[in-house]
Image (cartoon, rainbow, N blue to C red; front, side, top):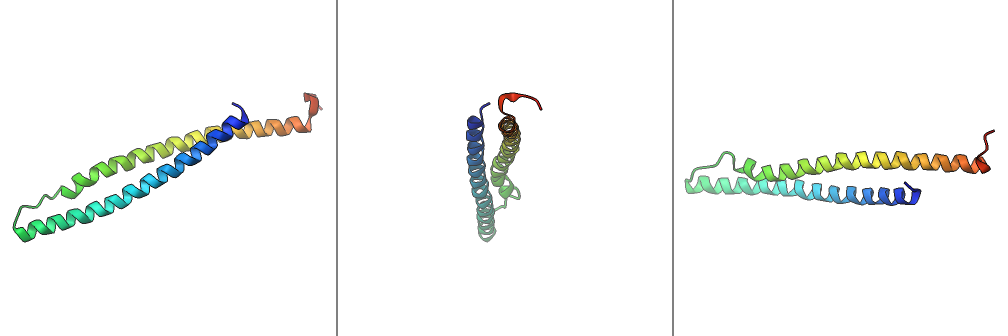
Length: 108
């Protein structure tokens, strides 16, 4: 891989990290709001004398938990890709540094 291609990949990985962070923040806020909403719904049921669903909040938050789990998996893949590209890029840099100190590629 060329250094410019690797640099572009590192920038793209940084963008993906930012997007995943935003998604995770939104889902966490939604989870809080959904829990509060279901608390209000269940309180309303009590006032009306209707049967409560003990799993209502769990059912609702389950979808959000699945999305958060998927984001966690994507972050792990992102970290792995970053490490691979970065280590490859570091290798290119050290080779370029070596070549600049040793013009003509001749051993000392």
